[in-house]
Length: 115
Length: 209
Image 1: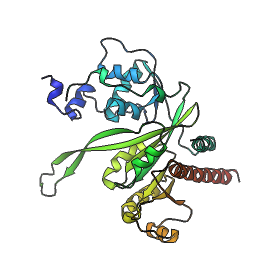
Image 2: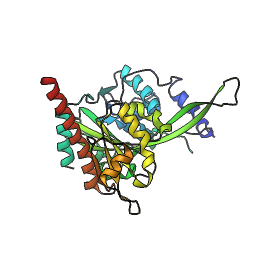
Image 3: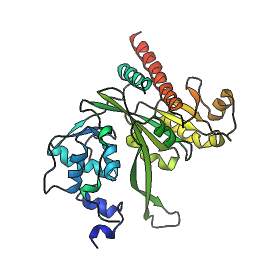
Image 4: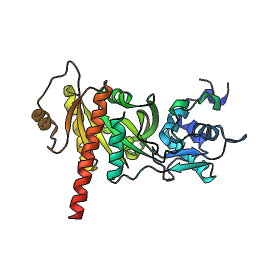
């Protein structure tokens, strides 16, 4: 039995190990819908979760989608992304400003009408 | 469960890949009680198969019997479903469904922040389930519309009765929908966007006059 099989996938112990003990409370300014795009391909020797992120983000993918595909909580994905951002391996595209912006509202209305 | 290797993570299907020109995202939140149809509505409008993210939260709960005041930690797992709609080559819209009950409000922090607005999905059989949510959205100044999801066996009320029961101001749009229908669900999102447009133009007029 490998150590992975001994604990629940979502157990705090496992998540603690994945992030090297960091809690995810560090503010790296990532929103649920910040788009992440891979800059450099995954390399041998990298942590598997980092490799997975680089693989799924070949096209822009939001933080919350990464969380769903990797089956990891957003708080953990945020910590992993902070590493990749620090090493410049991914690019983060911030969400549109939340201020009521007429142009954004118009674009969304137009987009929905075409749905 | 076997340990997961990087091979088990498949990522989005190639046809679901966003164009590399996608520069920013916006979000709308669908909020309501259990079984009200949030996930159904998300599925109706989403261009991708809806996804689920789970948050495991440690919530501190203090027992009243505990004289030493030692906090007991309790693990709670809450799932949030979401879907996606491409607006154009540069923008993408995410639609989240989230439970409205007060004990799940810890999920709302990162969710409502920066969201365009919210849809409160209502079941007329359980109107009281929406009271907390409506109050909370008003406090947070999050613009919202109320959509009454059609259930065959649910009682029908007049708009006036519903507004009174929900203590809903006339300015807040109230509409009926069938969350199973794409067209109807789309109309709900459009109702929110038209309301936001009205609010935004009103703000601009107020600022320029």
